[in-house]
Image (cartoon, rainbow over all chains, first blue to last red):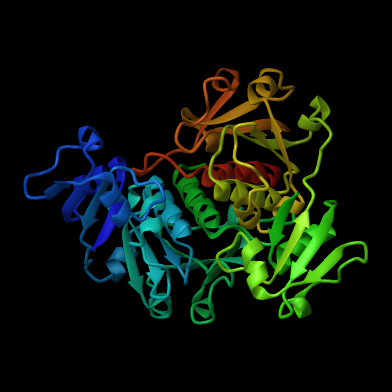
Length: 227
Length: 227
């Protein structure tokens, strides 16, 4: 189970395929709540009790306890449907949440993480995803295994590849992004078939990984857009 | 004054035009330090003392006290040099730091913030900028005044504008991004001359502001790149 906080996010999870087990809310938040199905237990608690169970500095008056989903295993057919972001040991929960939100904006269906990546159901990730976790499937899998047998091209975000602006991404593929400090790890790197770089015009050493992920999503969207 | 932490960031500030006043470091970090000019006071302290003055959960062994710079006022001539990111009441220090880092990657020179925006010298902003704050000038100014008298086109990131992929940005301009929750405020919005949208293919309600800023920077870079 994991917790989801805030009216908007709780609403998104109620509307999703996730199973919401309990909702806890303050009297003050009751009026802002969406309609809660009868099979979900909803409990009014006082603010100090909510503060104790909340993971936020400023609790938002409502908190849902939601079941962690179990997805069917990834199949080659699934990987052949468009593009997937693949995250190799991403560590920052805010970055993962932002990537999930961005994937949702650009219409991706899944994000695939290495087993060493931060937990998608971490309260900070849930918060940063702004409800998008309710729609994006997050898989955890052995990435070396995945990329070694990928039925689609494996693009990797690296510092010395060819320009993202001149890359033909085709119809489907995996887009691998590496750890915040170390980039793509040695178990995955040899299986990258297309090394892609976001050209640098200035002096920063690297880009934030959620920013890089977004720039890849945008390039994929732009190419679909025929521009 | 503000504090900068970590070997890499301290190094960037030593190399910059900023005036570094003091450096505090642990005995353990001494070997990793860059060469410190003689006019800068460098003090070895124990780990518990560093922990008390550090703003980080895990202090990185070195901390510099740096003077907040005073820039010459923005002039029309400065605004006519390429593009500027303009932030209307951005609140999250991590977002501002990430935007500064991204601006540095894409070769911008300045980021302009409304006076109600989060402080660029906040430890979390400094940290998220990953040293790029040493190179990017951050201005705080009355944005309504700035955009009302802008000598260059004023682009604004909004949800109902024309596609960013089909926008001709020309040679220079301001690119305005709004507050995390409320977007561009009512004092600034009427002065936006070009409403621009990152097309949405999925279901997220919005994008993270640092992600939006990056997508604008990338589009500007790509157009320079002639692609």
